[in-house]
Length: 193
Image 1 (cartoon, rainbow, N blue to C red):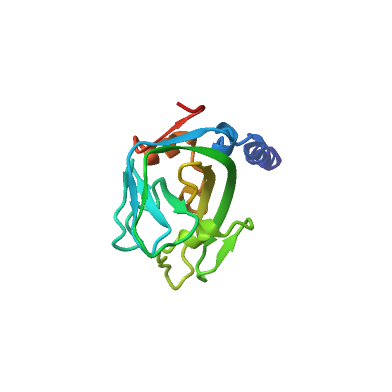
Image 2: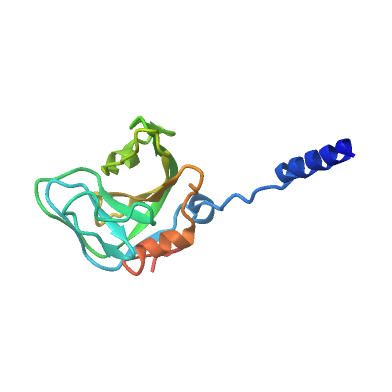
């Protein structure tokens, strides 16, 4: 009887590992290179900055770096370089020329890991992370970097979107979450209007 119970237990626990997990479809898999991002309003980037936060379809103020909830989908809109004057990005159509996926994590040692050579995404994360003395959980960010091009505004470089999560819960943003973060400020289409 004990052997039968042990056999049933082994079969039940091993069958759990045979169930395939469904991997979320990434933005890179759904959004083709050549897609167009339509900026519908002027974005102002303050002097001595090269990016601005966007969350829930609005530009977030830059009083400090903690202006968005990093655990909800958000984006940063980047220029090629920081300038000494205020930059205005006018409504325009930006072509997506490249899509890169990036992963970084912050663990209890304060150690940051970059899974790709593109460090730009990590450079924009200037948020303090607090962990307890017992190690605390690591948090992970999966970011999608959309390289942008506009003949009218060549200083615009990219849009970086993602969110931070506990390591066990972390997944890349979906296309719907990206659209929620951008709202009506930036609308995604497949062709020039």
